[in-house]
Image (cartoon, rainbow, N blue to C red; front, side, top):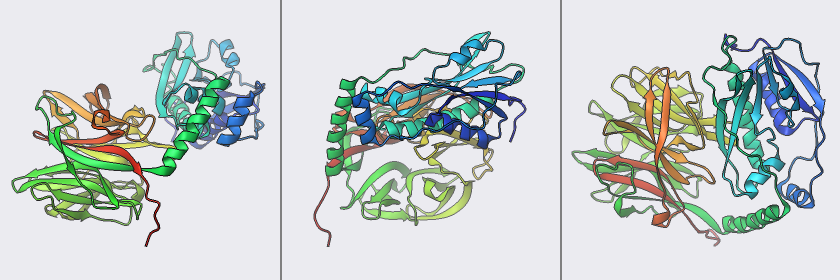
Length: 485
């Protein structure tokens, strides 16, 4: 749908031949229905070094180039110029018309390889605006780089870059331009040197061997925490062992007069998906609580007016469904479909005293589907839920995806979130929510939890109930290569 602030016409400048990321942006503009006029200028790429050519073959970079088609001359009076050229020389000549461009300008495999070779795990993309008033950042995001693969990283980055361009143009105001644009930083764009590429290839070989010989194992443990530090690694950890062939993750407490119950994602390695199980911490007895024909996880449970509810993640179903407890801890029924037609990860409900807020992780495309935070709100628990106008309110692989329930602590509103940079479940970032309303959302990170002191490779969910806290930790264990019977 065309918004009232959308540009009447955008002049899009591209290279000829087109780079893959430029083609992705053009396709996104076509799907959005934004009126554009495309103009191409000849470009010349520097020949690749031997190291780059070797890596490109190993990483299966696309070898074909695409000629720009459907191009015209730059129109005389566009509202906005979108400069997608890698050199950016055309944008420098435009002074009277706002010019939008991506930083860094080069988003192909060769540029991203330099980031991987330098050991970076996060790639920042900014859509910048240049006008007579100077240069500012209209919208930005960070994307996790895929270790050792520039091709996969580039695929993920260009999807996000295309989405950011459309968002920036959607937010354009014919009178004020981009009034909420932030000052632009000046990160450096690197180029890959042959020795660094050679080290990266060697690292990829070693990593492939590790992946072949080991698998990921998640473990759940709980313990006590200080009352003034609700989000901290608990003391005197007590492990909650999973049965053979399974692992536990995504733990949440339900404390009642009858005892303390722990709900977990119960992943079956043979099936390749999880159900929800519950453990009575007084006896250690575990039983299945919720099952489905698709993957279930993140069983956040909460009580409202004497009734217990659960909001498990079931992104594979394309729905967010509220469950109601008929008998604690293991009799649950579907109550209400809160969202339909969305792949929402780790949905988290929070009541602020006036409104119910639903936090979910989503994203752009299959490569980065869970690193943007979307928020909905409703007057009642069962909705209907209205999307926040600023969605996604956070676009950052470090700290967008929910990692547990939101907690009030000494007047502060704290939201645990996942750090997915480098690899899934790297750490937990605790964010303080500074503004939460139907028109505004702001947060800032205040602390980070890691599992290195526990001898683990990661941590991605935490829950607190009084003086108890529970976490899950990530480990790598040797695979079993024995013959199955």
